Image (cartoon, rainbow, N blue to C red; front, top):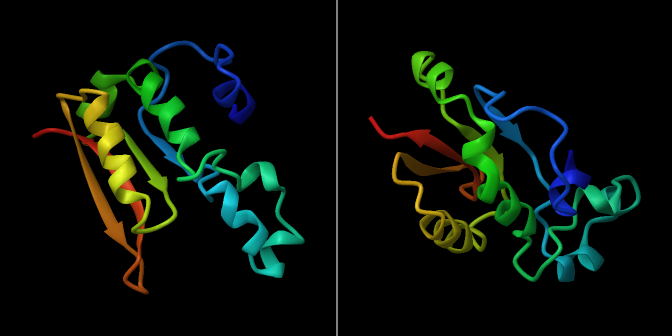
Length: 130
């Protein structure tokens, strides 16, 4: 699926086929890859880490552009589910993700950011407005 998203290929499933998306996308800024701890750099496939731009947000750009076609609104609302939950690279990415969210004009959705136990913004969710 990652290859389809990044290469702008059609996705291999029908529209409106998900109630919820949980995602740990590649989100590390490309320039930071050289500075990863050895425990990560030696074992993780760099395609699973590289966010493909200076902010590490390429994947979010693509996914946000098609998110409304992936979610089955009726089932998601009936089950009181968020639309999507994503891992991110912390406080530095939050402004870029907020700007992208606003630029997509998701008028029926809210975005919420959450901190990990170390106090760093680590995840965000997109949810239906109540």
